[in-house]
Length: 135
Image (cartoon, rainbow, N blue to C red):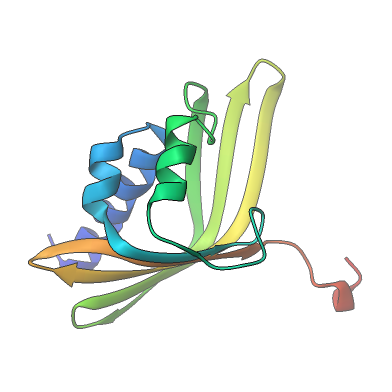
């Protein structure tokens, strides 16, 4: 497996751990020094894993529902043992009220530590047109 394939496979494993409530895999694929910006949660940086463990434990992502995610316009920038992945994240959830889609732009910084990749920073932003564009 090439490094590029390895990184995308790692990211899939990491993201699926969130939606499947797999805390063990999430812990293994995420650095203890995680920092993140999630515009839909708070306008401030969050640090560490405790917030996400709480969210995973309480099924924040609609766990149990039928879901899929797609990475639109994925891009990988690789710099030795550091990788930056960016994409538009589209989550589709099928529930009792029908199918719901949510989108946001996302960047994740990964570092290879002791031969294994870990997510150390996440930045999410809205995926809609800027107000200056009339939308």
